[in-house]
Length: 394
Image 1 (cartoon, rainbow, N blue to C red):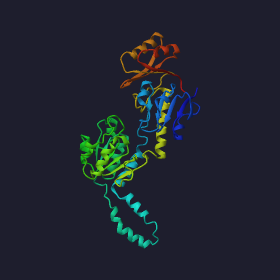
Image 2 (cartoon, rainbow, N blue to C red):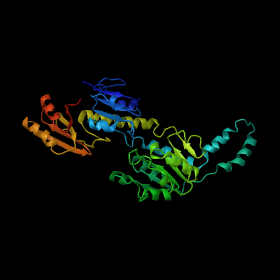
Image 3 (cartoon, rainbow, N blue to C red):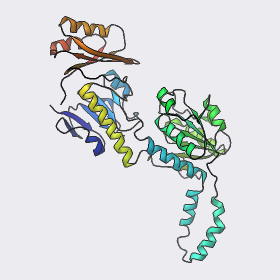
Image 4 (cartoon, rainbow, N blue to C red):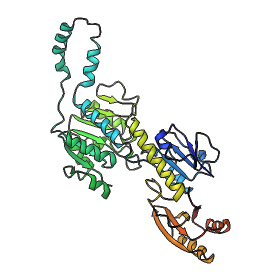
């Protein structure tokens, strides 16, 4: 029977094409979908049907999804880290240039000359006023990059090619990200040290309890006068009142962000964009493709890649029958599951078990199909969240 995937936003056709129509039904309305694909739709816990096995976000942030509730129900939430990284990186480059040169001010001034018809006279006026829009070059300036993941590392590399000095800070830097990072990126020991030594600072962090309003009055007090702060990550990372105080006190020369706010609109020292960091055809295609591939691999094989609440786990199929078991991360549960299989004389061919915080996830390849009664025995075990039998996949 075809699996049903509910789409709650317009998803790129290139992504949906990754789900073969002979195996998947895709629509914006299903009563009992197997999975949900979305972008920015605000998903409430009560709106997730009991039938849902997985949720895919065609983008990096998952603050529009009730992840904790999904974990309790054994639903992995997938995202698409890095799929829109180049799009954001390019907009950061634009932000750096807008923050260093009087581009916007110059364009606005030229628009005031719309009534002039004498080209020679216009040239005289422009020559007389262009000094008002003089800026500075980025070469030799120092950029601080806070967060060195998929986007931050690309921003750092881009800045190096533009002739900037780059200082990075990321206490949670993964080994993979560290390998990806240029050796020319100098490391700051603390966030305040980075803020104190940079001409430009670019934020590339997710919204977590530890990062919400991370950029506050204390941190902004460390910046050198004239610093430009760029935020193409999340609005919640910056404490707005402290930001306004830093701008009013000339600690910050300019704030450039992808998140408009009533308190900031109309200021000459603020450049705001309408959340267009990932708004390119290529980024939307890449995010949708990644999310669809991950959903399909999970539904058909139980494999998990880029989940924000489950461990990454991938096991090559060796049989047509596979069990996926999600349980609380406590001792003896896997042993109890294996004992049930042994009591039924069901041989285990291969298996893999991993955990992440309070969740443990298991893939178990077995020689033959199990009955519903056996599955129910496993589901009745204390601490087991869900059990799924994955048969041969077309």
